Image (cartoon, rainbow, N blue to C red; front, side):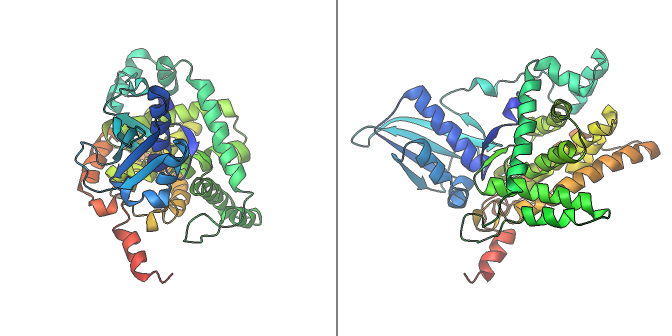
Amino acid sequence: MQSLKELYKVGKGPSSSHTLAPYRACRLFREVNGDFPYYEAVLYGSLSLTGKGHGTDKVIKETLDDKCEVIFRLDWDEEFPNGFYLKGLDHDRNEVLKWTVFSIGGGSIRIKEYPLDYNDEIYEENSYQSIKNCLTERHMSLKDYVYSYEKDLHDYLCNIAETMCRCVENGLKKEGYLPGDLMIAKSAKKLYEEALQLENDEKDKLKLMAYAYSAGEENADGQICVTSPTLGSCGVLSSLIYYLHHDKGYDIPFLADALAVGGVFGNIVKSDATISGAVGGCQAEVGVAVSMAAAIYAYVLGLDTDQIEYAAEIGIEHHLGLTCDPIKGYVMIPCIERNAVGVLRAIDAAVLSKYMSKVKGHIVSFDMVVKTMNETGNMIPIELKETSTGGLAKEFQKSDKR
């Protein structure tokens, strides 16, 4: 498995696969190869089908100083379904150099012609069972397991936790409309104001949902967010971390440790299945985020290693088959609302694990669910994997009179 720094990344929304990944690839192309008179980017897969709504063409042109022609095509014959050709052209617009860039989820990239050292595998284990065996042999916790491989990670995760909190804090102050032709009003501030007026058991729930809306709206507005594991699902973990810090008083260093624990489960899914909505549907984004958040909350509750696994397993198991069908290609509907519901499901999963573990042992392992998720993702039709050609996106298009 790769470093958790490649799982938790800071970047601008609205989509880790569609904006952060192309930005990273284009910036690296210039750093490695120098400047060219012109560039050409040919987009394929969901980058082509929903690139306009996600602002893929805009971020590419901005990164390459607007000297790039962006072309949208569908006939992609490469090994991974989501990617683009990035070409450096001479003054006569003849091709001088070409990179084949794969956007593999969460803002991560792979380049066929240029190996990346941050894609190196630094963890020896590649399943939760092998990690559990390691914990038993070394008499260590999940947190210590992570830091045994990444000794400098804690400060990085402190910054990640702080960035998540800033993202939520910023979004709670804003009004107006999200970009694009859907004309969706920002809701986080008003939701939070509604929550503050409550004096019943719905208060914390509505706060959490407002926090998730805040992060989701910041992402949709192209602001700075954290991939967790993706930008489209950033609201789940960001809302939980903000709630634990702002409302429950947990300090940032402790929450950094919690992120390390949650990151183990996201990393396993990234390694053994996918965190790309274009490959596995939204089960790979919000589903994985709920799983990570469930593990984080279980850690905060002081649950043991088996109970943390159970919480993470519940979190992903009950999102199996979740499709990715954003209307008009925007990371707005159903994405933001799905984040708000997801953070509550994460807490439910951790609480259920805490008490169900006293009743009986759990039979389904985290590894089983990851394998099932991968198989399920392979069976989801392409129309329901971030292409906006099926599901809710299709139904909306039928009825949209604007």
